[in-house]
Length: 119
Image 1 (cartoon, rainbow, N blue to C red):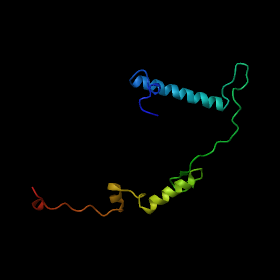
Image 2: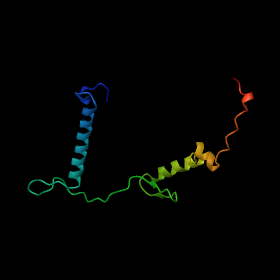
Image 3: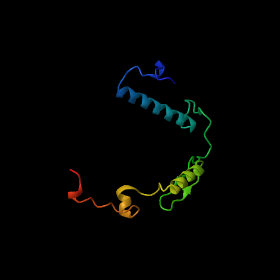
């Protein structure tokens, strides 16, 4: 969508207008969730929507910190590939001062004596 579309712009500027817009979007999202899960009913007691009977599905894999295992989900294979690539490229190791303290990096070299440093 082009940046200068007038319907996409707010009529007012400022943080308050943006917060109001965000709160309105959040309210609509909760309204949709309420309808989908049949938490709202018509005044006569009938449901607006057919009750959601589907069990929840884990959409992505998650890595457990203690043992490094991955719980399965739809994105588990892609997550495993990313973790393997980070391990191959040694990107899963600490860096900076933590790595130096743990021995992953050589100790920092001693600074040259003051008489050898250029002024």
